[in-house]
Image (cartoon, rainbow, N blue to C red):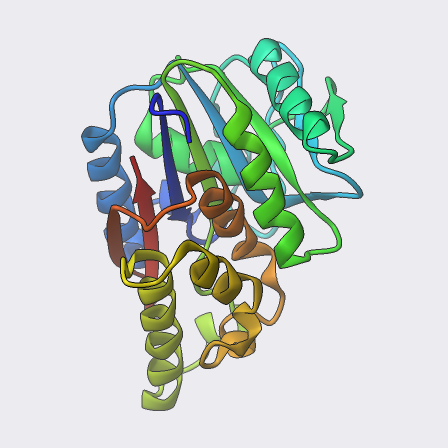
Length: 266
């Protein structure tokens, strides 16, 4: 990993709720604000969002991407949120080249806007919206190994003072969020979080062991309960593929009543 690159995986909460004063997101808001204060202010940000899947890794390359309000059922103010950060076409081109050089077919998209996986957390972390941003999609196969490989390909990036954010959620069972938080559900949630923390931070694991655990994430305790569909976990795989080492910091927050994790590699 380029020493000028910081990499973080964040749990980004439920839709626009963190920006609407929802009490179930208070810890998340605090943790993201603290994280932004601990990071050096980046020259540009690359976000891998759980909310964009494409047939091949696709990169926003427009100079001024609009916002995509990709949620429904929220009050009118949720559709008036603004985050007018610029795009960064040169960084998009470099990401495309890094993937291409690794033999990964990729695509540039100069029309797509930024979804809430980008603008919700960044409005909390960098409210001035003065840092150029691009987004990178997931691959719709949702194959864990593919996303580890995408991350490894990004090691070829040579962009000074870059921040890479995997914007997902370490727990993402929508039914469980809005059901009674029974001791059994709490135990399942915590068992998976403990596994994920050990997998990402334990320096005793070799990097081949760590990568294998992430590739085989479905074998983790209660994995499919915590992630009935894995799109919110896979940004973590891209982050680890890029970092290629144990996480330097684990941050825990209770979000919507569930234990959730974030990881930081410097």
